[in-house]
Image (cartoon, rainbow, N blue to C red; front, side):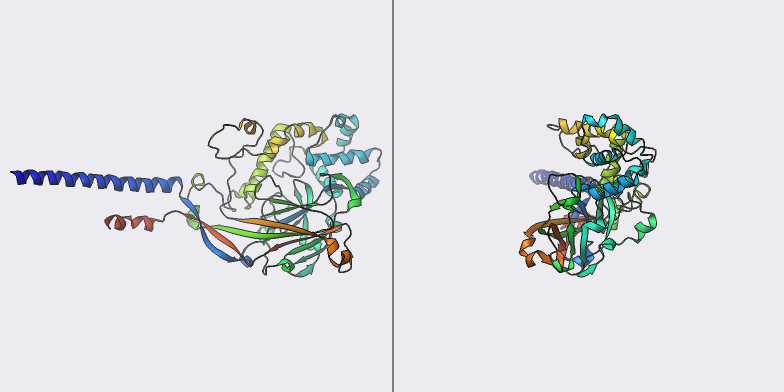
Length: 434
């Protein structure tokens, strides 16, 4: 009888521990399953010695602090039949870049001047003609260790600073058709070092200043991925400055991120990123987080001020007028809102009252699934220390030299991948059995 009781108790204990084990396995499986559903992707390092010959060199955009050339302004005035007072009015167009405003702009002469700006492309073409010309700013260029024609290396592209000189840049918001987008191939530096990077001798054209964005002379340098838009507030655009009489070094270190085909199988809401060839109708197969933020800003300006900033050149809404001086009051009022972005995935709104009111909510803009991140280290020396202020027959007085290069022969390759594949989960039974 005692033996029977003991066997019965032993059976109950075995059943109890079996239930505990079963509950543990169930909990573990549930944790693994929901963990994969909520956070199914992971970034892993593939290589820390990935050759730079397989990494796209960044786009480089050079913008003079001066946005209206004095010589170009005089030439444009000379072409006009009625040039009385037109010089001052043209000079005020620089405010369309920095959104500065004062009440003197309500003067009737400015309103009559705007009546001559017949269409959207009118302002764009005027500002392009008045901007400092790239062929005069860029004195000498070399790329991959070879002296090359600056006019072939650089093209005039629109940025938030207006018309600037861009190298290795493609944008769906420029006058670029699909065939040009398909043919575009980003440049790559093969051999590391200063000599084999991008080297440019720049003339700040100090005597040509008439509308400067800053109280100094020099250039802004934007370094970013080739398909992005030149806007330092739009994400992953590095903003640097260089001044005359200095040799500026910008050493680049790059991290390239690829994505496995399995990532595409997840819904966008799950993977929380876009591939470049997605949203083709909207971005012509050139999606980037930067371009998406730019579109979001365009819509915000159009909604609040009923116009489009000329440097955005929104080809999707030609019916919306270009922003002119009469819109400056509105643009100045909402300037902070157009610049700042509301933090995505903020866990709490505490302390963000001002950001909620004065920031853009571009929650539909998602990061890039595949992207190349560039990091820079800057240094500079005075040109007076080099060859008595001469460089191969060029008088370097009031000029600057910029060199942008990959300092090492390797970068980093990372991969966006899924956390667990089906065959890895299938081995769980063997693990539990063990």
